[in-house]
Image (cartoon, protein in one colour):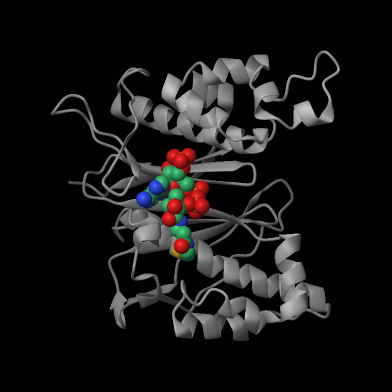
Length: 299
Ligand SMILES: CC(C)(COP(=O)(O)OP(=O)(O)OC[C@H]1O[C@@H](n2cnc3c(N)ncnc32)[C@H](O)[C@@H]1OP(=O)(O)O)[C@@H](O)C(=O)NCCC(=O)NCCS
């Protein structure tokens, strides 16, 4: 059998499914999902979901959250339908014992698909593979959050790191608190760099726990330790949103080095990072493909 291939998709929901602003909509209405769902584009997309999926999307009060949920359903169904070669209605999303979304083919000899989704800000990412023996996890974080910055300014970085001691090992908390940011004159920039380092740790851990499927139930979060964490830098190239991808983090579990999990974290635009976890080091990670709604998702 050849090397497993992992495909990676990214959809930015910012420019799509705008709020219906006809009839002089008020600000309050524009901010409500019920109004957003009346828009022609949103209607078209919502009609591609099952009744139950639609209800879940419309439960979000804010259109920005509803859009992420809608994007997530569409990407999952598109992945199942296109990669497993089943019709759109047959691309049924199920959940495993840990409530991790998965696909269970209707036919016993049907093509399986391993996948995982993350959404944050305006982005939805899906990573997937047709390989049966692989587990995948993905996580998106956004780093420049004013509220984090304000809290660090008020309480200091050690207090910030201590808040997360139920998630990180003692060594990780120390690494986060004592991280020496690259040369910056401006103290604000130093905090920004330290927060970016913290979010790198966070994003890697989330991708790992999502790969296992245990997510919030994982009792071993503190026993999973990342060492030599490298912070990916945003791209400095005009016209290229994809920054550095870092793959060399050391993974330790209960004090033993883990050599059979592949972890990568990549910078996207100025303030996003996306981590991918794969239960095979040999599986090949394709570059993220930025999807076009009409061409790649609806088609
Ligand atoms: C859902 C969960 C797994 C991830 O939540 P999140 O990071 O806030 O959100 P993300 O956008 O990255 O992920 C949401 C997606 O995870 C997927 N997901 C849900 N349950 C999952 C599970 N058990 N395992 C893996 N993925 C899961 C879903 O596809 C969901 O998107 P959807 O509802 O649109 O299908 C969350 O419940 C969780 O357990 N997070 C870990 C929290 C934690 O303690 N983190 C500490 C650092 S690790």
